[in-house]
Length: 493
Image (cartoon, rainbow, N blue to C red; front, side, top):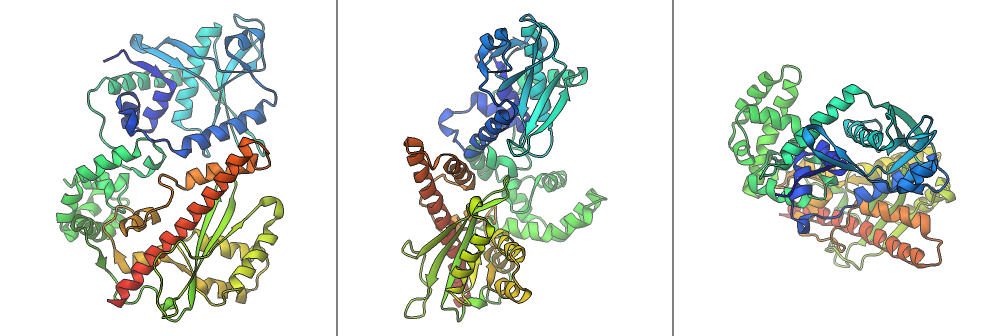
């Protein structure tokens, strides 16, 4: 095995997931898949740094020697605890008061934060950068700077890089080195909901499925998995064979504070595991799942694309689906008319609401199907903000049908998640753009917003990105219809 070089990137991965760091070092490169979350983080980092340092930063050691206000591209190396070799590439250094080997100035590291608070990951990264920078400039680095928010409202927070944090860094580096020296990867994390952000997700998904990992059971997160493991239930198969009443009693005793909540769900967890183990759906409610469609001449399939950080629902997409002349509901069809409404902030919400009103009025009384509560909440809140009457809001509410809620009420499916991707894929739907998800659409949207007026190659690329966003949004609507049509077919049996 080659000698291990501990880097800030490996440290960041390790804090998030020990298995991820091991795969970053040992994993097969061909099984590592790019995802948009890292690109979005880098985009937000650039915006925050540009707000902090309006002028173009200098590069490398020469910038530090010249006393530039900000420096990028400096690679740092040094020795960590127990002689470990460490290296880092801080994204930005900012000049501060003090003295260094370069003159009457010194530098501090700057980190762009995502999320709402400074985490252990942020603190350890800044501590590592500060330690290596101090050795290079031969003067202590007392603190680092954390920024967030970009140009609209830049937030700044000083983080002290004291002795306690340095001890935490030494401990983390030693544990990281120990993990990387192992011949086998650490086990899967208990709560795999955050695995959607990881480039190794597909590889770990395969391992989880083959092992019957408890996180594969819908409704089980990290805490519930720990409770089940304590009862000797280690796999999906174990849970499927458990007695629900006995398990409920065990869970209630195991957690005095929240035991009753876990116990109340014991029967559901066992039932879900049994359905997944058998691979067959189970009906929960004999009543029709979608009675509103019995006499409807057609439906509108509704899906929103959003930028949550900007609180911007930038695309409202509708697929218009009519009953056939024989009164039958059609299968998923790419020929169904698609009506996208882009919500440009410079046009204002009032204009968007008027367009939505006209579209909905063109199909009076048609049910509006969507998957999850996002669309109904967004539309009803917009109606309230735009001064719609109570009667108008109630009529709109009566047309909105959440397919996710209807599905969960009526059926238990052999899927590890009841998200649209998992359910529609189980039903055989395939998105026209493999590998595209909401995060990639958000990245494309931000790029389009920045460059769509550019007459050159970037502008042309952004036009393609907009077309790809529309195609993805349309596919999501058609995937929702796959779920709705399956529910209708089950009601006919």
